[in-house]
Image 1: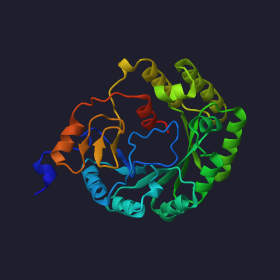
Image 2: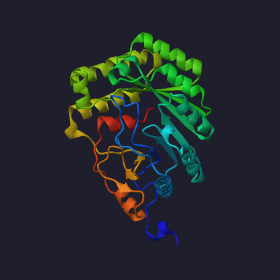
Image 3: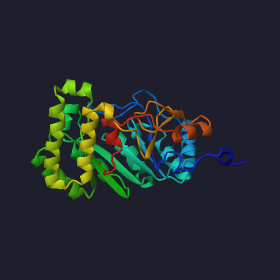
Image 4: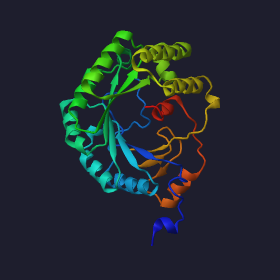
Length: 299
């Protein structure tokens, strides 16, 4: 008997229209950025049994590829096994990491050839000061240069970026032969208060940074549209539109959500029919600045 047929599950295009999955390998991270976008913050790793069940359910939903994130995925003791299991289900694997220490980079290096792409996160000088991080562009490039993957991406979170810094970043990226993704910093009300910023200053700095970035990197229309989304969600939370993410999220505990910030979930360990009903039902979640940053289409 075919369980999917017996339960009359909708096809992948009808079950939420999801194309990919973001999988959290752990709920903790030692970097603790002041502007961290992680929705789940808890100790412990995603276990193999839950992960394998998640892959099975994702495959049934028509998910084509997965991205492993965290916490910090290179801290997971079963990372290599996770990648190979995904391949057994026919899914290419990508990783988003902040790997900098020798142990982290060595763990990444060991699986690099098995990955479709690697994204290493870095922060502009202003973002590092605001978030109290040490993720420099140079250290990100050094990590990427040790990974043997088809696609290498440096993801830069920007805040109060200068023309000189833009020139230096452009030089480093060109010399390393890596791709560059740019994102504005995203701050909630609590983070704004800690930074001593009001909403007008925060949103205005986004536009100022975009102007500086555009002179050196020729930003597409998607970047401005993303800033518009952040502005609208920040100024008029009551008008936020329903979630329409093309990426389903799996937490380190095995909770399946439409978005990392979703209020509703369905366990990957539950019945197929429950998962299908959950993903087929109209979304009750509304787009927030944080989730908009994760779902950008232009990066």
